[in-house]
Every structure is written in structure tokens, then in C-alpha cells.
Image (cartoon, rainbow, N blue to C red; front, side):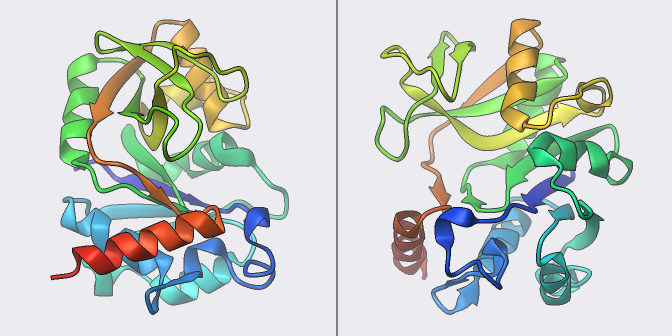
Length: 230
């Protein structure tokens, strides 16, 4: 399986005061830090190597997750440094640890899909980037993707249209080349550039996403995890 970059360097401003002294990845969900739930999910989906891109409070994440052995993973770290690099900048900074192709997830996303199917779709498409999409229809967040016949027609997180019934699911796959020549700071801009060049593949997942970027999202994930326990 491809390695996974987890973008865990954000400030978590929507969750103050929880994130005043605590990184978002370590917010407690059902008695455990969110990161433990996320890492166990990745391992259960066949992931073996994780690159944690960390920033503010990053040392606390490193202290908690360590080398990943207790999660059955190999974990290495890429530190943003004193300046915020943005989501794309964090990936670019981590390229020496990621290899020729890799998956990318956000540090506040819990995505119970088949990562193997996503990786296989990326290899089959032969493009430098792939975005996973989900038919959201405005339910869990604002839809931002127009998806038709297996391809992305339009993607815009700011200027949405009624034809946008899908959403960027939060799991991407990229070749190293997609970032080596890119200067964008935001991952959404990298996706947009690839789409304009006809170099962005797509894969539709069927499982809804969960996130802890908001207090409402924390509650939804907590309920989902409680209901899915054996």
C-alpha cells in the first residue's frame, strides 16, 4: 500500500478553547485522542507507513504517537517549522519522506472507505492526482464538486453551483511530480490546477465522511464510533 501523509499542522481555530493548548489531533473522542481512532482505521484499511505533517503543538503529537509501533504502523514526522506552510506546502515539505506516490488525508478527517480501491484507481488512471468524491447533496457540508460520468466537471470551494452535488471527500492520491513543480500553498489550489490541465482523476466513494473540525462534527463522530463498536 501507498504511504499516507496526515496533515496535522493546522491551528484548529474553530475549536477554541479546546485547541488553545492541545493539537486538534489529540482532542478526546470517546475516551481516546482522535489520532488513535484515525491511525487504527488506517491500519485496518491496510496502511503500513504514515508521515505525520505537524506544526503548532506538534511535539505533543510526536510524544503520543511515537514511532507508531503500538498502532501496527511505521510513523515518521515532517515538521512545518515556525511559519505555516499551508496544506500543499506541508505536503511539498514532506516529499523526501513520501516516495513517488502517496495518499493524503487531513488531520481532522475520519474516512471509512477502501484505501486500497482508491490507490488502485489512481494507478489505473495514470494521472498525477486523484480526488475522492462523495455524493453529499449538501447534507454533511457544502457540496463543492460537479461530478458526471466518472469525472470531475467542476471543483470550487468558494463559488458553488446547484450542479455541485458531490464533495471533496478529503482523501487524495498524488505522484511526487504533482508537487515538485507546484508553488501553491493550499491543497485545493493544487487540485484546481490539475483539473484545469486535465490531469485530475476521480474516484467516488460510498461511505460518508466524519470530521472533528467543528463541535458538531465531534459529536457525530463520537456517535458513529459508539454505534460501530462490537
